[in-house]
Amino acid sequence: MDDPARTLEIAQLDSETMLQMVRYIVAGATMAIGSVGPAFAEGKALAQALESIARQPDASGTVSRTLFVGLAMVESTAIYCLVMAFIILFVK
Image 1 (cartoon, rainbow, N blue to C red):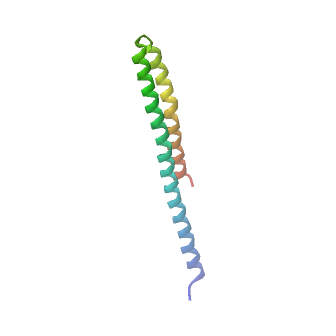
Image 2: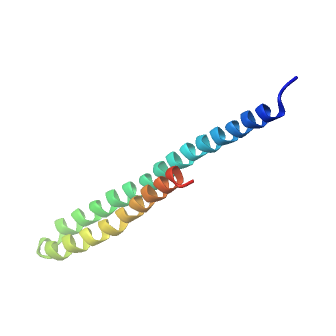
Image 3: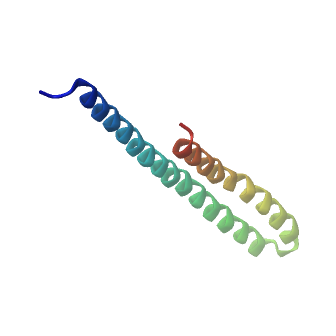
């Protein structure tokens, strides 16, 4: 006959293993989704800035400054996703 304490120990180990597996999957999905959006946004912002500079070279200083502020704000989304992925992985 199976020892009930041993059966409970194995079941608990399995639930912990499943929880860890779900954490890895969710953290990976968080980083995958959270990095694709900012990547497309940064590419579009850069393309628009280069087009603006090509049309009005005199405004290049203003456009560049505004571009860098905008890129920093867009990049913060990816950083927040990275922080959330770390929290998902390491907080128990």
